[in-house]
Length: 555
Image (cartoon, rainbow, N blue to C red; front, side, top):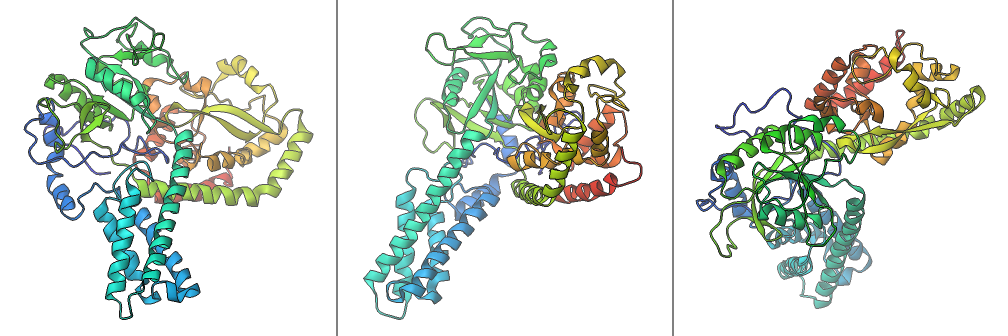
């Protein structure tokens, strides 16, 4: 991850700040970038200091990029995927035509040139701009022009006679295939939006601009969730009083901070009876609120308050959050000002947290491939284990329980039952005998474990059904272990850092300190994994997990 600190903001990294991989979660993307800002930003007053410092080292590369690509392009991984997909589609469709209908298609020797020309024209038309919708408005005319221009150039440069039927056939098949591909991607994108978790946004400010942004984001097509407002000046706050409620049920202790005891609610729509968005605290509370609410982005809506804006920006940067701000602009439309709009409110991007997209994509491929193969290979053994559990003790074969996953999201975790069927009810009576330090519960010789369960736990065979959780995307092969809801309810605020990523079946703790009772050591190993994550580290942990499982010391 690249350093994004400036001369005035150096040293803001702290040992207890959330990991820079805080959003290392496949399926959750960073906010779309704004249009490139012009060099002259003198009119941006309130946030000029912070914005200029953060953008300074990137000015020349952005100008060079704009020289070759006049439209904002996608991030490198997404860009490569789009271009390679288009090249493959054009090559496949035109290649089939050349074989089946040689008189109505391009010569095979000209296919590579045609495909490359289409993508180059598509760049100039802005087809590969960074937009969340794979099939945005206006893409059809741009693609049509790209295909037509490329086909005319290739046919005009050819040695044979100009064949209008071949041109029409090539344009129709190429354009149709590219549009069908984007339509298919849009269908998948729409389904992904319905199942993926929304980006969590905190708005700093309580004035009209902040409320306007909240109204616009409520129906945002990017599924943005406004978690609340942060404000020092509550003079503009309408509405009544309301107590903070925890959506996930795992953050009860975080409300003990010295903030508003009865946070004020903003009505985000003029409709009567609509519950508003709470003012969760003051700017000084932004540090702990970012962790407690699993915030992805802060929007600084404090026009005319440069000191407060800078304070909030520094805290957000220290916590590795995306930052956008409302600038002070003179009245009037400014189409070339290089700003985005949320509803009718102009915003500029001060900082976007980098996400290792390529690495996360490969990690997900590793998860899906290994989990699918593992389930297929282990199916006979899993059938035998199910039979043994059924013969050993009454109760279901599969034990399901709620666990807390990435960003506090609850999911159903699956395991082979290794305890008696009423083990959860007996846990409260055994809590006093807990031999683990911190909020986690475990005792040696747990009386709830069955005879078959003891053997399953010795080699971790009880966790084989969690491969299904990996396939579903609730878990990863490698990551911090998922904890039960009642254990997470006992977390201190700094423990929430381990919820920055997806939980895993195995991790550093399993291969280095599996028998240690120290929760602090567990936390240290989990954070070491998060902060130093790489595919190589995942492979190292997976290989060493096999060694540890069959080592004589076991568990």
